[in-house]
Image (cartoon, rainbow over all chains, first blue to last red; front, top):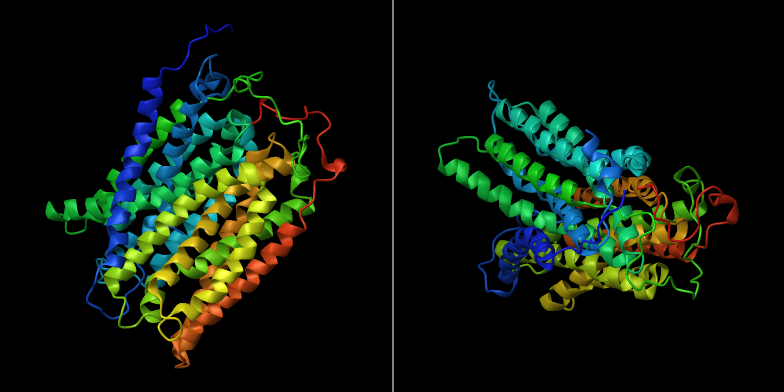
Length: 55
Length: 457
């Protein structure tokens, strides 16, 4: 089957990346918020079970 | 359902290959949720059956273990089928299985039936994990023959990123349903997550394209300088697993993953124990967040770097620096060097090696066995991950439980665990060192050599 040479639109490419980039950015932001706690003075408590980690 | 056929997903001339990684990411960002399953542990433990019964931590822990074991098994079993069926069909089936798994499990959570949760999230969802994990790999390699590490690294980075999304998403949904009067918010949360992930994965399935058989990137000229380990021939999956190279890479992946589990399994209590009086629960949560970010970043970074450094050299870096980092870690606590920044830095670098090991392996397989059956071979190799997922926690928890039961110093237990991981990484170093090009007798005789972009996916 013959196809016409039709270049993918840059806007379509940007949209495709945005669709996956936005949820990922939200996840990174939320993890970053957690990571900041490591550098803030915190009241020390007893050892707690491990929170979720990406293995 | 002929619209799922491979022939229907062949890209038209002028189609940009940069539309393919987002399709792969949609799948991996979804199935990566599996590593955020622990957010449901405590809510599940708090549920009561009609007879007042509750589940134990061990019973709830099996849900994740089953899912990861089934991931490896289904990737190994369906890899060869995927090569024929094409990525779109495999991704669509992965979406159905992963989404359906949540729905079945939601019944289990609603009716306090652990068997239904095992069946749903563990078995049905696990098949979705296995199919989804390997489905975009060979397609990406064919679209990016000039940068296979970068392409597969992008997708597999998504699996790490999926955990970063899945954890807050699960927590937010449970909080939302609880605020709206649901005594047990898990069923509604899982139904919602199942629908969301199903739709997001379908988006990936319908936007994935395979390149036309004669397609090459614009201006791409295959390198004329032949690297010793980059094969110009293809090896069929039925032959690949009979080669020493396959089993050496199996050991490489197994040791690298097991070592990473040595940190991840006990990350929060470990840093609190190492820096007693300095690091609290919130800071330890921050440490886990840092590890997750570096795990994800390492997947993209090292897989991309491997395109220039070579796969064997990349693993050489993991297996030479890695053991030093694991060896040093127990000596950075408050009873020795007492440096939180140094400890965190060392652990985070080690975690980039862990993530990088996952993301670089598909390109390593492509180098050794060619692109023809790379998804199927990758699928079989993922049994190393399943095995590490069982062996790693057994080593870590077994040793720490023993130290606790015997009333011994927990810090010594961590030291033993981390130094066992040093030994495992040395085994991985030797396995990587022994990797040589695949012997000619294993090459496919009836398939074209070189950058194959034919029917198989």
